[in-house]
Image (cartoon, rainbow, N blue to C red; front, top):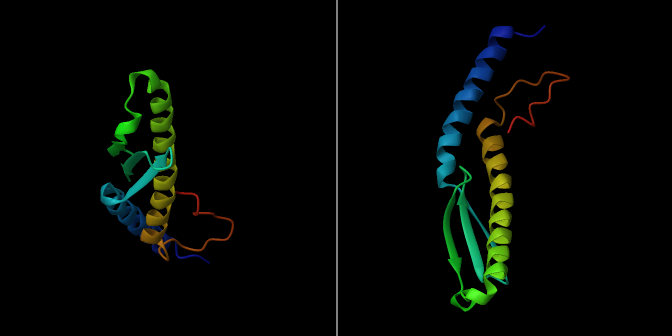
Length: 110
C-alpha cells in the first residue's frame, strides 16, 4: 500500500524544485546557426531571443529574402536546442523526487 501523504509531499517538493529550476532557466542558453555560421541566434531557457549576429556580407537589400530565411532557420535551430536543454534541466531538477507508481509516467511532465 502506498503512503499517500508521503507521495503528496514528494509531489509538492518536486513542484517547488521545478518552479525554482524554471526561474533559473533564464541563465541556460543555446545557439542556432545557419549559412555556415553567417547567422547566429542565441536564445535562453525562457524561449526568448537574447542575441543575434549577422555577417556583414549578408547585409544587402537585394538579398533580404535570403537573410530572412537564414535568420528564421538559425532561430528555429536555437529553439530546438534550448528545448532539449530545458527538458534536461527539469529532469535533473526532479530526478529521484517523483514516486515510482506503476502505470504512472511522470517522464513527460516537462
